[in-house]
Length: 223
Image (cartoon, rainbow, N blue to C red):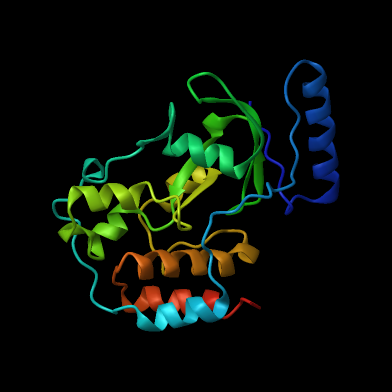
């Protein structure tokens, strides 16, 4: 069952949803909290650093998806013990996450900063590649080795992976910020900084419309 609570709900609707969650919890299910987890993807730069990185990125016409396949970016790989990259991000970004012997999340809460929703089933959460794999391919990753593409697709040291609502991730697809931005406008500053630093650290290009959209989002940042 999917119960989504958002800060954008009218007060009365929010109260009804909370009451319903309490009733469900009493029947043996986990209730839903709209509070975000304390964890965030690592390596999110300051506004000043992101601006310098954006200025340094190469602007070029976007490449083609010819030859692209997700299989050319192997994921999810084993990170530690029986835990793969997806499971590591679920543990990092979730609250009170419990896993079984195979490292699969059996319970927890996940706040999706893209849309402000909170979920209690890991199956309702996708791990988003902030810079999508196909977008990376069009921006220079087509010339990388498979090993480098694997490292990019499983990058836990930069803000490239984040747990979000599954259908939001699916609606984003492989779009760049010129055509897709988080519906929660308060997160767009952070999103732009994540996108910029990932492209900068991986030496990827960007197109003119993408740079303009990133600059507009970055301008909303206070720090």
